[in-house]
Length: 162
Image 1 (cartoon, helix red, strand yellow):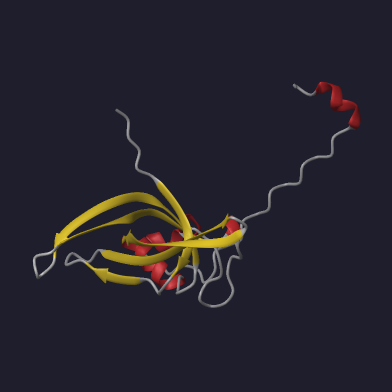
Image 2: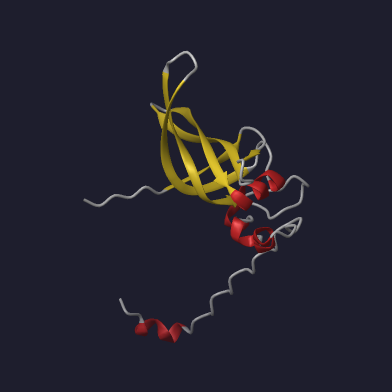
């Protein structure tokens, strides 16, 4: 039997990222994400918002804390984790959360400048200096726009493969 545990979710942070450190010094960050689905029911516009916790580790957690804030739009790629625990009063609790493999920054940073919207926003791969223990740049470098397609000669229409 095959199985796959991979998730993509986009939304906005509901509060600033929080980062704690394990006793060994590993950074563990928590992002609280709201993802809203808009749909129509009998001609009425409805909204359904899902709130989910995202866990980020190591340098990625520190970069998130530095560049993200409440309201920041992000795309998270990772996997679902299920946790169970008992409260001090003995009640059983459980939750699902996302263990992030990558966090893509989709909008502006804290300084008001930034990478713009859409997929051109900074992602963790855009700040390699941050992963080498150096200070990440204030803004990710913009990606080059794709080259415009060449204008085709109308006489080539007969060469189409379909």
